Length: 129
Image (tube, rainbow, N blue to C red; front, side):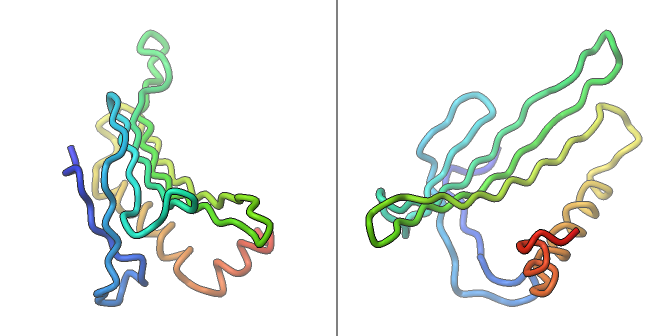
C-alpha cells in the first residue's frame, strides 16, 4: 500500500522539479484512498483517488483487476459556481500470466508521453481522434 502522504511533481516527466504537490489521505475504505492536495482550499480542492476492484467472473474465466487513478480539480467562476475538471486513468489487467508489470508500465508510459506532448493534448482537448 502507498504511504498516507504522497509527493508528486505536476511538471513534465523529463524535467527535474522542485514544484512538488503533497497529497494527504482524507478518506480510506478498503482498496480506495482519496487524497487532497494540501495546497488547495476546501472550496476549490484538488483530489487524487486510487481505487482497485475486480471485474468479471471466475466461472466465466474472465476475471480482471481494474486499477483507477483519478485527479480532479474544482474551480469557481466569478459568480461562485463550481466546475470540476477530471482525469481518469484506468489500467485493466486480465488475471493471466500473459501480462507483466513491465508491459503495464509500457502502456502507462505510452499514454503519459502522448498526453505530455502539448500539440497532442491540445488536439485531444479539441476533440480530434
